[in-house]
Image (tube, rainbow, N blue to C red; front, side, top):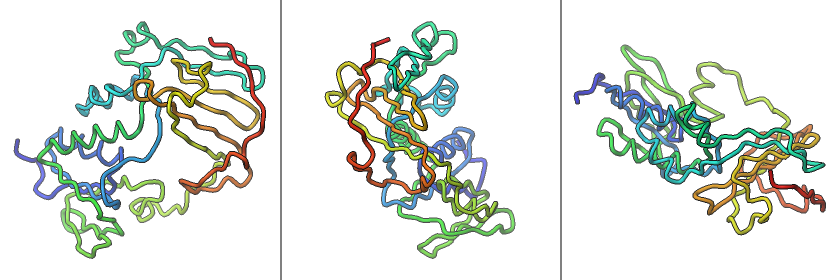
Length: 262
């Protein structure tokens, strides 16, 4: 199929958002080039919960079945009292739910979404993927945009999509609103082997344990081979860093709540 644009749409950032944008453009007949600053296209995140509307979007990009291969179709969404162990909210997301909304409420690893989108992009001849290409700025020119890169070689396109993360160079140039505000929430993430998860907590559910200024979320991943764990605390100085180590001895207390399986 002949492309609708002579100059490509330039997408800054090769994460889930950038690849999804490029794939969506390609499916509508537009050429795109994706510029990723890392040496290779990869996703280092952990788990994610996807409701039916999110699955509809992934299906529309043509990669829904690929993502669902490793996803876990959970049976319930739970909120538990972190002090008493009692169930507060219990929402069934079983087969009846899937039939009503046309897709599941499922959990998966972000890398599986990214990998499926990457495969979809590689299968599109109208998408060019360039790793190790960091965008440093841009300027609007006649009938398009000129994108500056760290390598010094500008790239011209008909439009520019900024998908370059929370500290986006593109956003800063357009909006100029500075660093993201501190939310006061710190999230500590881990992906465990299934056998490392306490057997009495291996539930087919997306589970949230709620406490004062804290909560913990866990659910299975990749066909029950792994478990995703996220512990969130509210602190006055939470910071905005990423990939910082969180030694258990600094943040954990020696207490355990006994829970009854819903």
